[in-house]
Amino acid sequence: MAEQLSFDLPVRQALGREDFFVSPANAVAVAMIESATPWPGGRLVLSGPAGSGKTHLAHVWAARTGARIIPARSLREADVPRLAAGPVAVEDVPGIATDLDAQKALFHLYNLMLSERRALLLTGRLDPALWRLSLPDLQSRVQAAQHAALDPPDDALLSAVLAKLFADRQLAPKPDVIPYLITRMDRSFAAAGQIVDRLDRLALAEGRTLTRALAARLLDRASPDETP
Image (tube, rainbow, N blue to C red):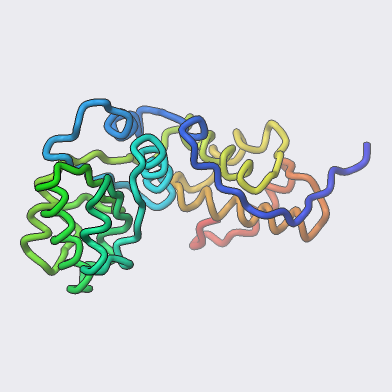
């Protein structure tokens, strides 16, 4: 049978609710995002490692509520009144831990949205107690908000993440590839993204389909100190 060829196709990230796989590792966070009951104080902090689904869930919430999504580093005080007109998701808040101007803008946004009874979603990789925001009043408010964590993936979630990452790249690995990968790879969302990217590039370079043999060669190439 002729070998299926790989093509350099654009990555189209799927961010709909139907594309998000629920497992015990993220069930609490999903329940909070989908809850019809307002969050306590109208605030929710969503934390989890890179690739765990924070941005995906922010888009799910935004699609349901009409919320705006903005990176924390893009916050400007002049934009706060406009943003506070509706629900807002602010991503990667720990990324402004040393940016006092952005923190002041978020502090203003936080307080204004509280007075306007608007919902505010904040995201970051670590537990909010570890965000180390240099504006103490903002740090204390973040820590006081409702918090939902996305935990490291179990087998079912890791399989679903790999399948989604392949689908985002319009790739169709052989059925035994994902089960093979999850028994041998570093069990993290970041590693899943790296492996899919490297398999995509390797298959493209060799004009081959994504097989278990190709995955085995990729993993064998990784040094003991390097995440595949």
